[in-house]
Length: 261
Image 1 (cartoon, rainbow, N blue to C red):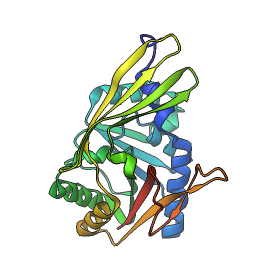
Image 2 (image 1 turned 90 degrees about the vertical axis):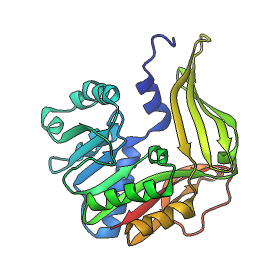
Image 3 (image 1 turned 180 degrees about the horizontal axis):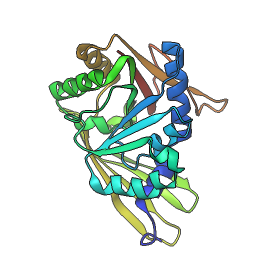
């Protein structure tokens, strides 16, 4: 089963929910700016599923996806962009480039999701990237990032999640408290006993919420707000994110950080 599996399909099913993300992006922008966002850029876009979902909202929506990996961009073109209607395909532009240097038209919304921007482990480099994001936005544009934290994020641990036909394993293999550098992997296991080990590998710095907020302000953003996930009656995340200036002392959490130009 491992030999037959497509790691990009497995990844999207395990990690992403682009329908909910587009809804959150559109609703939050409208609440903040009093208008509808139409132009969109996705940094570290990978398969560009989010960009494709964005243009599906209507003919007036367009998206740019930026990634440095040519192979994953090509997979996205063949398996995501090409599945769109012809008119929608024309409104998705994928660019193979470094997000630190790429030049694109200004957009209403710029996103850096799934923590990929944590590859910038030095503060100066991170602030420089955030300034690039600021410059890429329209005058009332908004930057959306995600982040995770909690005591469990500082541990060397594995977390398993069962899906239909496979098990997703998030593996925090190494963590160094002096630098907050961490080495993480995604593995997949299948009912027949086969495995895809280290299907994805990440070398990051674990940035904290206060650090990210401070850096965004230093980069020139005016308002920086953390959107925290609510809980259902069982105490589990309900997928609804709202502004929160304190958060909750959960063992593990995921939140959005929203920066207004």
